[in-house]
Length: 270
Length: 357
Image 1: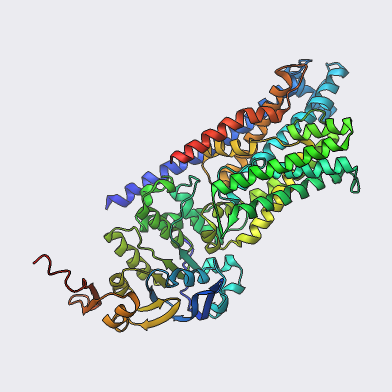
Image 2: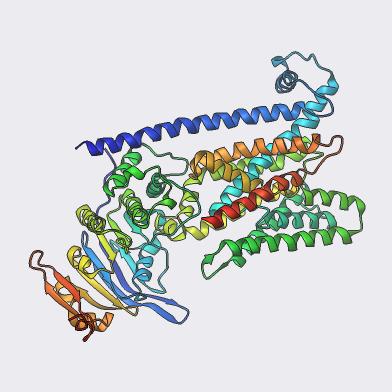
């Protein structure tokens, strides 16, 4: 059988700050994610969501503060070891090289391989399972660069799955995805039972799938807690500058956010 | 219920097909290399039949392997004159194409090439400096050593110039590379012209144009060792090279220490290019064309593409060098001129095709 998935880890950010020039993109943010917990990261554009996540997967070293995976500083362990425990789904960046979908997903096996080692049966099984669960197995031999945005996004999630980590960081994984695949992707993350931090723009998706939601605004953590406690009209007005109504959905019991148009906007029709 | 089964069949078949065809491609490329070596050793002012070529080679490897039915002059021509040159062409061709492929992954741009990025010109300046100043502190290693330092300096300079704010555009990379190559070539020419020694001018010209004339066994071993060593290292690093194609962030997330890896690769490529330029001068476009042809044949995955690039590059430069010394015999065309004649239009075509996408 295939190699097992790494156990979900506790992910902790301790007073993480990222300063570029004189501007603090992230200012003393602390997060504590329990093993197996799915935490949504919300906030307007430029709030520092992606920047914070980049300090988790070793793309950007925090100016101060620490990121701990099961108590171990991720910036003090070899990158390869971290990549066996924590996978990242990033925003898609195009390339000029025609890698196939299969080759892109196969990259997820890299942290598990030594130099000169080929892909063995286990690797192929893991890659195939990842392709299948993201519904992209038919595209295995298509050039990655020619896919639609949503297909690319699913392939990148499949690559992270192929890493077989117990912890995942996802930066807007539902971007470009159609409604069904948005749901499928987040449900998949939930069903894997991994620890996950997910940056999401869609607050209703966040409310439906996350155990807790953390809200960033201008680089600071302004709210954190269960969706029902965090998503309030007051907070939405403060952080997003929108008027919204939050109701409990009768079927799911989860909070549901409905944006209200500015006063006077609706009357025009009637 | 049948859907997953069908999906599996659809996937499994092409994989198997691709694997056998990759093995076939490798065998075909290896056969092509043998043919190229044989043809190149056989051809010239004195034609030697292919059978006799292999007889002489076998005999020199071990006298029991063949009966010497040929004249000693022919043996000298094959073994001491032509073979080292053909082998050097193979080594330099293989080296340039794998260096081109590695550079393309490192800067994540398919228009990279040792000559286009100014690396070869940097090596030339290093070599010319040694020649003009008459330094020879490290014996046989002085020239390749200086070429290596020149190549490394040029590569780092182009990289830093092309990159600003963490981004590197194709336009900036190509402009920085071309400008660097021009400045360094001019510098090399200046050094040669002001040295006032016609003999030095002659050997310096060889580097500028790129050529393999006058190769002997003693010129072969340093570049051959460097290229084979570099190739072995690169073959062990094909997975990290693949990660770079996914972008720096993704490579970091997949466990690669991007900065350290890139620094090491720059040194490795400079070492290979430096030792090659020290003996053959700057031969352009091999490192650009070969990787592209190989990617069309076997795909961009370096685990498949790198060995194929080495084989194809070797055959290509052997053929180019054969043309260089036979087309207008007894005169010789510097092989760098031929590769540029083929490579320039290819580069333009590639640029247009990319612009169209």
